[in-house]
Length: 510
Image (cartoon, rainbow, N blue to C red; front, side, top):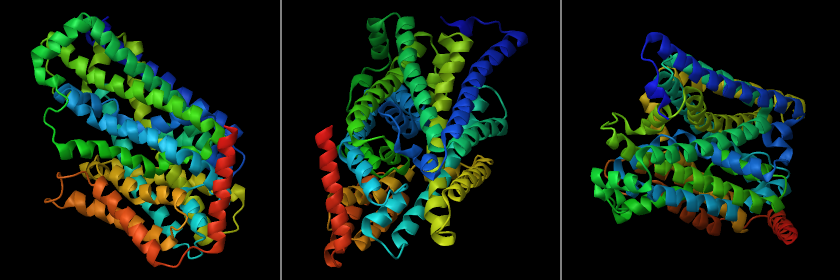
């Protein structure tokens, strides 16, 4: 072990190490491009491009949903928090794990059935329009604009993360790293569509979980085993074993509430719409939850045992969030290090591509066809979707070019924004026949506004995670407005009853 630290310190030795790291990453990138080409050959129409023809298998669906969810937070943010705080940083993991399980259990099967019954809806905005028979199109347009605006910012932050990763790890210029990430992601997303995004997410999910199991395991071995590792952490600070250290009741509730966000994340729940059948969802949930548990526990242990390793060597990290990177460099041969660092790229790129495709799909399906060419053919709509991928990418790339920190600040509450605006709306749409389009629209807007206000008013910020009041306000407003507004039409109620019948039929076959 410790191949990196034993390497020659000469200029030639350093260059050789960097070339080996880049070689591993290059193999990874070429693999993604090959998947994009393969998917391009399999994509023949709009349904293929937007939802993979609703023919994704359980393993691909499960790992795709997980990889598109986690982003760089899993390999940097969470290990960094564990490195500094210890076990008390794990409450957010509990909330996210419970939220992901609830999403697979209560949303996945229903959304898969209802979106197909509701005139084969291929995006969340089109589902909302078809679910409520909204002839005004206002619900579809509003939700599409929310997705397009916020995801464009979200994608930009992903490009920033990728550029910074190349800058700090491979010592490349930030803008070179930005272009490398952008070109590869744009290429396989633009040509391969949903199938390419899902298959690359599947590969990236495997890379991520292998890295997060391997790094803490080797670290414990290097420290001397479990006993010496525990002793070393205890010597650093015994409070690192205290799950309540530095927490409060409201703080724990806020961390746990992160799980509520899953119900409203378009780039995650769209995976449920693409699985081949409702019968496969239980298998996908089992795979997805196992992947998530191994990944998040591995990330937590990386930071936790990483603190013991650094302490045993008398080293103090300037940036705790780089603990995964540092351990990968110190403990492994540069070739293996390159593949481990590819896990970081995987986390970043899987999220970018998923969000990029959802945004482009909304631009094509929910704006272009709705406002300009309702009679657009499948071929035309697919072409527009591909052009939308390019346009959104270039806009996001332009925003990321200056490495503006305000973008990252906005993304800090984007999870809450999507969760509070779409989460209650998705749940009510799937479970409550009496929900009206005006209730849905009012709830969505009020939830989003509540999050924006709560996150930006100093007296409220920090008291409670903005997801909680936003989610609650959305639910309350949607219910009150629906009760006060005219009941849904007979056609809408009949569609809901048909959906419930198909749902029950599918469950009986499972």
